[in-house]
Image (tube, rainbow, N blue to C red):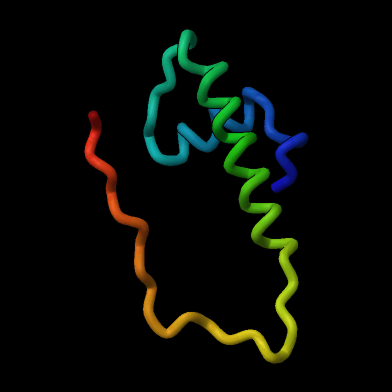
Amino acid sequence: MNSNDIDESSVRRAAAAVDLDIAPAHLPGVLFYYRMVAGFAATVGDFTLDETSEPAGVFTPCPVKPKA
C-alpha cells in the first residue's frame, strides 16, 4: 500500500477489521504512524536482491538498552 493512499477511512476500516476502536483524539497519531510504517514496508519491498544474495543463517536481535 502506498503511504499516500492511506487516509482516515482506510485506518478506520483496518481497525474495524480487528475489532479495534480508535478514539477521535488518537486518530491523527494513528494515521501518522500507519503512513510511516507503510513507507517502511515500501522501502523494504523495493529493495532488490541479486542472485548471489543469501539469507542470514542466524538472526541476532539488537540488545535492549535499559532506560536511564
